[in-house]
Image (tube, rainbow, N blue to C red; front, top):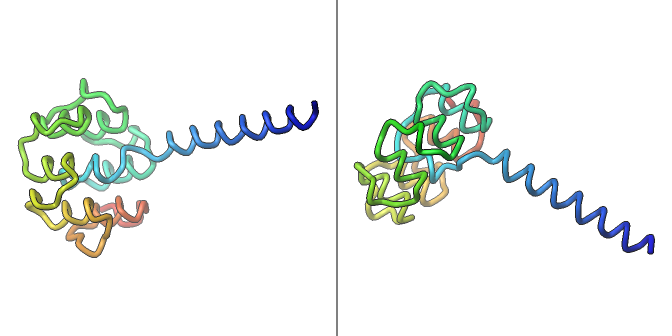
Length: 134
């Protein structure tokens, strides 16, 4: 009986840790890579806290609620539908295809490699380090 109870406790702890880790991860580079962000918005994404956000799109993406979006690209990202996209980078990120990319940052996000980044924000998001947020 104790072995079953012990296993249940381990499974429960693992589940809590997985949920906590998933929540702390933030919206992710593919979801926010459609534009270049300010240093404050960049930090907000890395820290997964809208308290640092300067734009409503930033708040929308962290909260995963398009009610805060001020751009159609933001709505597209949250709804995961390129119908709302106004930019080619937005379409590329939703379709996960760098064929549509207009910027090198877009290619970096899709390829998951900061070697293609042209902006500090791109490096910050792909390296998950707010040191690069400017």
